[in-house]
Length: 69
Image 1 (tube, rainbow, N blue to C red):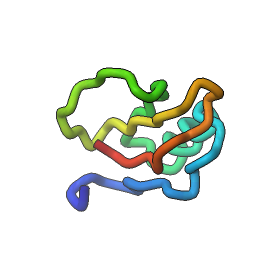
Image 2 (cartoon, one colour):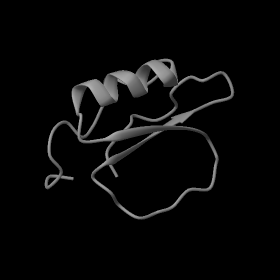
Image 3 (tube, rainbow, N blue to C red):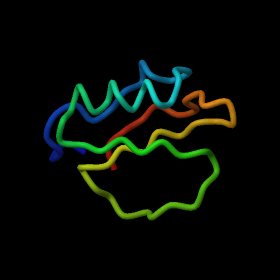
């Protein structure tokens, strides 16, 4: 992740609303697209600096600290 431009990790968003967290992520790093997804949902496993998975539960609460990848 060190090669990715801008902020790459958001531990402060753990427990936040997923949609609000995605907005914060994209505001703090305009190089990324934050994708809100319910855990567990199958996803691609390729690493991309321009993507941040925001894993939420059924109530839309962030379950894991979002990070670029």
